[in-house]
Amino acid sequence: MGLIRSIEIRQLESIKGGMSQFYTPQASHETMLVQIPPGTVDDLFVHRFQTDQLLVVRASFVLVVLQNRHYQYIPLYEEQPMVVKIPHGVPHGAINLSAEPCVLVNAVLRHGAAHERDYQPLKRPFPYDLEAAQATLKEEFIAGAIG
Image (cartoon, rainbow, N blue to C red; front, side, top):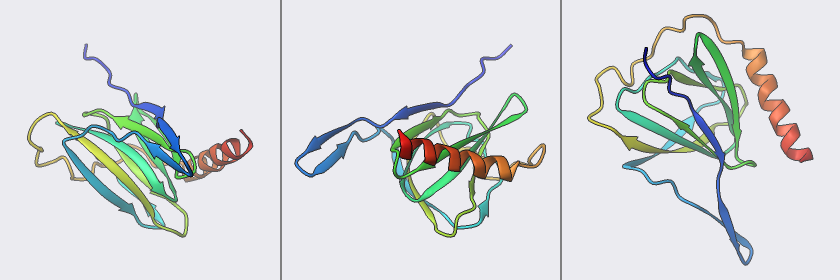
């Protein structure tokens, strides 16, 4: 039986210097700036030799992760700097139902040459629950504003 890979979510560490907040950069082999357009309901993707490390720098989106035939909806937004680490072999996609584009940084860790099917969409085994995804984003945003 194979080892199940899971995502990691952690608060981004920072230090304050005067009026500025300095955040710890993520070690990577390649850094990509990604824009998720408004109204996006993306298909799933899986990388065979790449670990994604995602950090939202403008707006918000919901990361969808498929594990054990269950979708996990993870809200990410600029007001709460979090790094989500998605290991290779974990299917994931993006939902941005807002009216503004989301911008994020992906600090990619390479474990080998990219596979030709790495960026080809996978067929979703069942539809996303868009209401649950949107509700998760709102709940997390409200919790962050209160806490």
